[in-house]
Amino acid sequence: MADTDTGTGTGTGTGTSSRTGTTRRRSARERLLAAAARRFYADGVAATGIDTITAEAGVAKMSLYNNFSSKSELVMAYLDARHEEWLGLYRRRLEEAGGGRPADGRAGVLAVFDAYADHAALAYERGFRGCGLLNAAAELPADHEGRAVVRRHKEQVESLLTGHLQELLPGRPEEARTTAEHLSFLLEGAMARAGLEGASTRLEHARAMAANLLDRLDRLGRPDRMDRQDRQDQLERPDRMDRQDRL
Image (cartoon, rainbow, N blue to C red; front, top):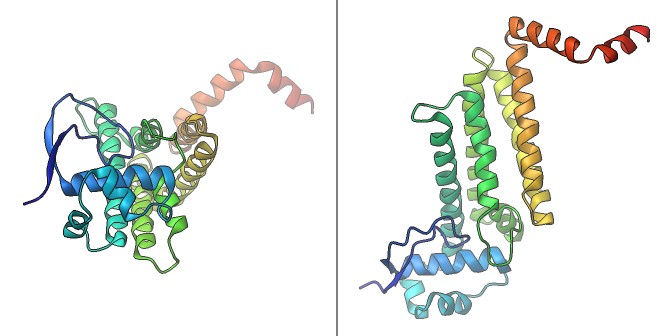
C-alpha cells in the first residue's frame, strides 16, 4: 500500500500556485515529487541527495525506490511535472484571454508570456531563480536524457508560439516560424535576466516588446490599417516629421 498523508496540493511543490483550502490525502509519490521539486529548485539537482528528499517528504527511503527506480528517474519526473505546471498556467491564461471563446493569435502569443511571468511569481522558498528546467539541464551531463526532456519542452513552447502566429499571419508560415523563434529567444533571455535579478520586471518588458512586434506585424499584413496608423503617427508627431523633412 502506498504511503499517504493529509495535505493540501500545491502543484509540483516548486511554488504555491494555488491553495483551495481543500484537504486531501497525498500518496508517497506525490510527497516525494513535491519535496524533490522544492529542493531541486532551491538547492540544485546535484546538491540534493536522496536522504534530504525522503526526510522532507516524511517517508522511508524504501518508499522512494518503490516509486522511482533511481534519483535520475525522480529528476525526469520533476522536469515533466514542472512543465505541466507551466502548461496549466498557460491554459488558464489562454482561457481568460478568450473570455469563453477561442483566443485569437495575438492573445495566444501573449498568454505564453503571461504564463512565464505567472510561473516566476509563484512563492519559491528562496526566491525566483530563473527557469527550473534550464537550471536543471545546466547541471546534467551532456548525454543525460533529462536534457532531451528539457529540449522537448522548450520546443513545445516554441511550437505553441508558432501556432498562434500562424493564426495572426495566415498564408505566411515561414514568417510565423521565424517570428516564433525570435519570440522564444526574447522569452528565454528575459527569463534568464529575471532569474538573476530575482524579479519579473524583465518578463514584463519582454511582453511589452512582443506586443509591439505583434502590432507591427498585424499592420504590415493589412495595408489599410498601416496607412491609418501612418496618418495617425503624422498627426501625433508633426514636429518630428518637419525635422526629418528639413534633413
